Image (tube, rainbow, N blue to C red; front, top):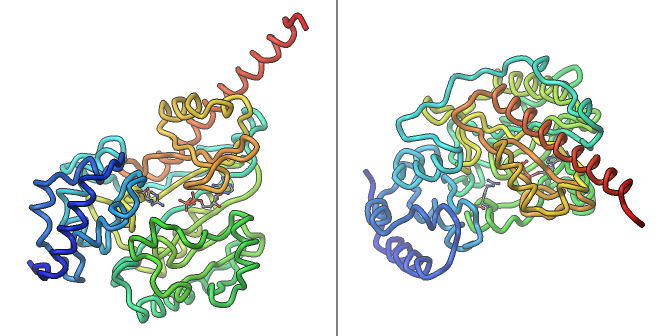
Length: 370
Ligand code: ADP
Ligand code: DAR
């Protein structure tokens, strides 16, 4: 096993000492005990990743929820004493002895249109992360890696046909104004994510980054944002079956052309441990004027159904006009179709709760004395 050099070790020791004095509710704070730190601080992966590369974002952002990323696939193994308890807690119980189940996309027929339960869903999206074998993750990628990976992906995207066909554009060739329009339309990733920047995930930006769109903007592929690939199917309305069907066809077509990084124990490998396993986040933009009045009530309801609540512009954003981004929280330890079913069942319950509050409000209005 390679060893960290003395200069890097001195920086790591100093930064960890400062972090120990800082208040944080991140899983990094909870699980990077002095014992674990001392056990891991000398280790270096074959690609050159140290413990500092894994934790620097969480050290710089004490308000992180997780606080760690993986600079390369090997980090999940070499620093497992830190990642294992974080993975176990985030994914609702996935012990170091457990293995991710085999791939099972199931059939979209099992799902349906969530607006049949009440017209609350504004739009529906299913996305996954994918890493490409042979490349490290963002913090260890060279300028050449970005150029080569972007070309590999662009060649694969050119083969998409029928309703999946579209065009790829490098971020270098998209004006800032047009980027902002695409971000506002929920199609493009944001710039300047401080958590990713602190993880050295934005070096050489915007080189190697870009976006693929099909003809009606219902298939979106992000290249080299947080992960090598984000494969996204999305559309207005609540027809989860149609969104998922398009998602499965796109992921399958690209998987036939690109070598996705896959681990028997952790499933599809991703930069952030929250996206391991299926790497799927299935979400709705849903308007909840009743439940949304008290975020704590909404969060408690979401927790019951293993759902996560984000704001209208996604992670680290606030809801506007009571429109929330609600999605499955678990991605590891269950199959693809189980992720989708968990989201469908949870959102159906959220709609039932919202409707019951509607009826409650109308009853109270009828019985009101003024
Ligand atoms: P990710 O889904 O890739 O983990 P974010 O939470 O940042 O990342 O969301 C990325 C973008 O996708 C944001 O603009 C967010 O508003 C948008 N988004 C997420 N879910 C939906 C949805 N159901 N309908 C429309 N846009 C969505
Ligand atoms: N900002 C990091 C990441 C949390 C999960 N979201 C991702 N991977 N986009 C944090 O620890 O809050």
